[in-house]
Image 1 (cartoon, rainbow, N blue to C red):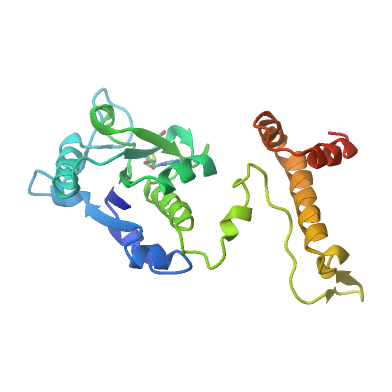
Image 2: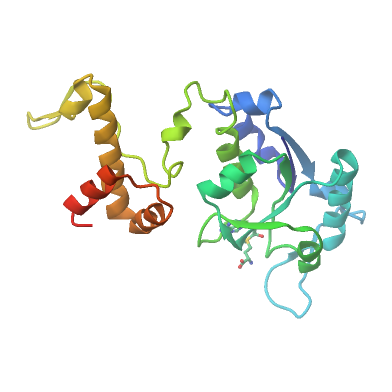
Length: 250
Ligand code: SAM
């Protein structure tokens, strides 16, 4: 898959594409990320990519012409892109279902806004997806693009040593339960010792799986009851799950 990122700050990407578990996907080209400096497509001698908004008001707007030229260059290089994403607080909130769609698709162009945003005519002509990270305002779309790239890369085959993403939060619509590692008993100030839940030391895979499932149901019911409603509606809760939830009074 190939992602073409149109940005004023391509240098923000390298640190994230060359570190950590997802590095393999980026360095092998499994997730091929090409960076396009928008300023290279400016049409004036000052390499200007923003100007004041028509109608007045604060801030600057990203000019349509450099963006049109950048998109034309991307298209000339790769052919018509399968999707053009604009990151904006007005978009659909990014979630794991949307990440899974992109992880199974051939890639996209990612438009990173800055200033007050992009000239609407470019959005109207080219954008297929508008994506938001949440109800807050960032100073640019680069972090949103990196979030999408990271989430997509870790779902690619061979990126994680074990298919641990299958147990991650949201992969089955629920939030994942707690994790424990060594020591078996954690000494804390005051002399107390915090043990690991006994079932995890039992070696009984069936009991451990059931305990993990129940932790996942409990944390989801407490923090995101909407996800329980959705899982129920999608038929993803077993009879045992329902029995456990009704024992919690849910
Ligand atoms: N004037 C815009 C508004 O009120 O919605 C905010 C512009 S923001 C300062 C600059 C750029 O950051 C946006 O064009 C967008 O690309 C990106 N951005 C800001 N918040 C975002 C969010 N929650 N999700 C995705 N992108 C965001």
